Amino acid sequence: MSRPTISEVSALLADLADFRTRGTGSKPELMNRKADLLERIAAAQPDDVEAAEVAAAARARADELTADG
Image (cartoon, rainbow, N blue to C red):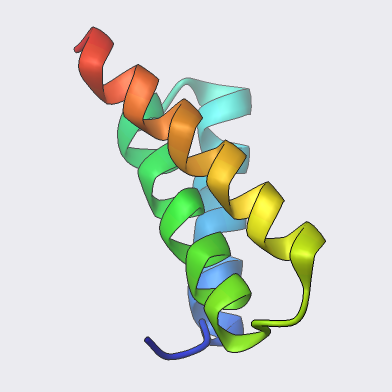
């Protein structure tokens, strides 16, 4: 699993901002992308317990939103 690039993180932040201000996009899809990026960050830093916890929480929330449809 590779670390996310700056452009991937920037694209997610831009899409989250658009969602927040204009309602554009899908919240479950955005949260899934966020969880993916956080998981990649945590995987690149295996000794960082906090990064792993944040990634796990983001994945749980993304999964909740996906299950809700």
